[in-house]
Image: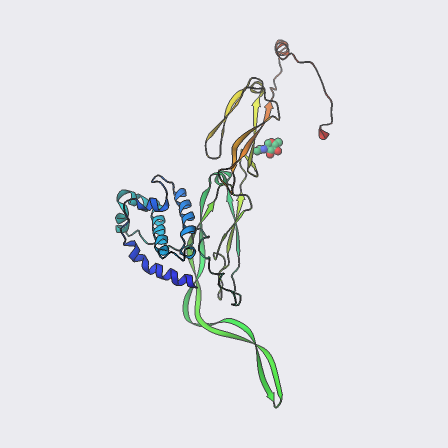
Length: 358
Ligand SMILES: *[C@@H]1O[C@H](CO)[C@@H](O)[C@H](O)[C@H]1NC(C)=O
């Protein structure tokens, strides 16, 4: 509960903080991004810093609230293209003049993962807090998104509790009570005992969650958004669990961090060599050059052109290309047959074997 008091103080301080004069282009340095950073880079930088700078993780730093607030202000402006343009044109004063500032809740857990650190840690001897249900949701992503990373916006109509008139029974529990039935006779029985709490009602509020598809994430990988699940009258909301579902790709197949693709080439290219481009998942053209003969089933391996590894994006898998040769279907003239025989000059050999057991 400490955290809520902290939030309140910070929200009250909001107006004071926003009146601090930020120096020119300071928001970019707060987020540690360049002025040409993309929105995705800004979101990524914010997500990382928000986890590091969250006041709950920096209890010893008296300025942690202010730092986090500044980070929130920088994010609010730079993540919104309209506000960012205003900011680039003429600084924070312009953004404020337009009344665009301070509309976002600085503590909204956009990214689900840096908010509720403390809610479960101080529950030592207390009775278990009831929780709302966990919501599971599949998020379908392309292989390009898993290669490059992306942010996915999820708009969620979330029931939130608001105070309502009157009171309601809450914290109900079973207690033993004794009743005297007569001289020397008692009855013990169980009874439901409740407290009176202020009444609440659920109101739907639209909330935007930002889900980061991190480079190298795998099919089936889950990300938890704490407290974004079903609400609970007498307790805390459950969690929202998002599960990555990778969509099939027209060119590549993924196994672990390796990518596989098939290329069909002509018989002529197979014999004399060729070069071609394959479009990589980030749009780069990969040049594939062969001077040697390429037989059906030949594989080439391009190291470092696979998927980025999830734990360490600098490590990448390989791209493995398997070739298939498209033989001409038209018949050759006697003359052509002779010419080819002369060029290839191969012995006429036929080997019969059981292909399933080799
Ligand atoms: C390549 O071809 C093989 C054999 O037909 C197939 O099993 C595999 O799925 C193909 N790979 C891709 C990436 O299309």
